[in-house]
Length: 283
Image 1: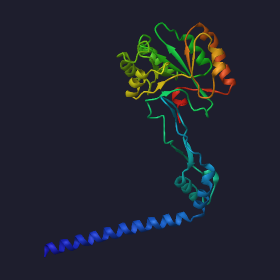
Image 2: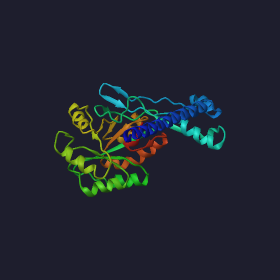
Image 3: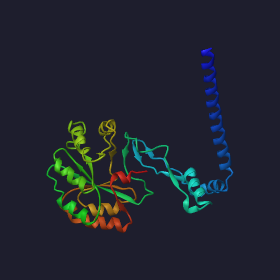
Image 4: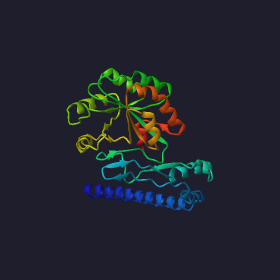
């Protein structure tokens, strides 16, 4: 008898739970159907085409990659909720959301990064600091011009205080390993030191070295192959070759110190924003 009572109670509870579940599902479906025929929803879907921007995949050619761009579309649910509270369709309450490209640079490390997206009016400056390099004048000019850059350092340039200073100025730090040799143990050691003061770092290459690419990609670090590498006549070389997305490598010397203010002024007159690599490569 006790068993029968317990079973009866169990099935009563089970039936109630099942009924509640069906009720919830039915209510949810009813709300969804009503929502679909709501004037606000109909207008939102009609407007969606006007706001939609297709995402652009990263461009991969052989061993090189150029970042694509995120797309845009209306966030239907958020926009609908806002307008429902408002009481009617209101275009100013439309909320957009990003759409990701199918092929992204984010997790693609086995390609040489040769530029930013040419649809964006941006360039990046890379300063190469090796043994004996003095960046005092460079930092002073960058501060005066309110410009952030990427400072690529090697094993001999490293000092903990220097890394902290570079990061405090808002610059990003790249890794040149030991004399650009990424097979040296200095690469991993320097990477760990850099990542203590900044979220990420980059490798540098000027000769499409397969070895460098393999080593850096295995550590999930992008390898940067600058589109412009300057030396003796940096201003003239930049004027000749710069375009949207250019990654400009600058060897630090007296000529650069003299011409850097002119380089920055020239880039700004070309309506090019000077940004750090993380921003240049952002999709």
